[in-house]
Length: 208
Image 1 (tube, one colour):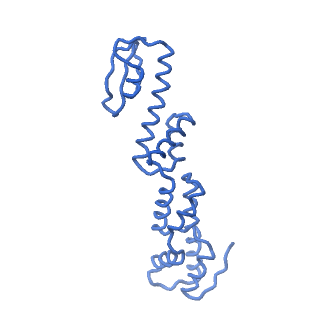
Image 2: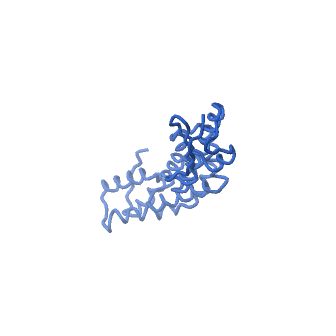
Image 3: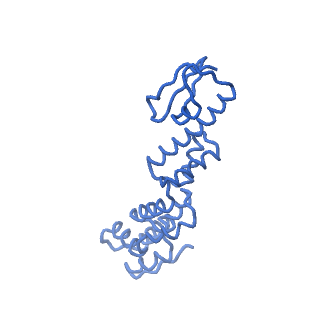
């Protein structure tokens, strides 16, 4: 199969378009262009075309990984999963994510700290932060270090109650609603009860 034309992509940097006879198109990088010595008029065997397609697909996965990891913070697992959804083979996606980690574009430890601080600032407790760690695929051996970023739970609960009550004294029914809301936000009953008792020395029985 003969190469008809070679030109740089106008849409994506680092991509080169190799036009073949009968309308076929190979999308490669400049690295593959040099590696295989491609030039207009060159005849390609069927095996070489297949090899180029495989190499080009791996390069496309690497470029996509670089773009994804530079656009927003992702865990290594999130990046791997996104690449697979874009059509990368499991091993190919894992290798690209590994490379991004080596380059420092992906750092699960740093990401865990960012997630912890973000949800703490929104008034969530340890339980909710751990849910986010799990959902985002952050390795468990990084959890404890990141969880040290969380503020004192009692202070976080007091801020939540102050924002909700605006200085009002809650009745028993409202105290129960507030405790349920705090449980949903990832605080434990043992963390919630002492702070609620400060409001009116009311004892509320746990539903647990």
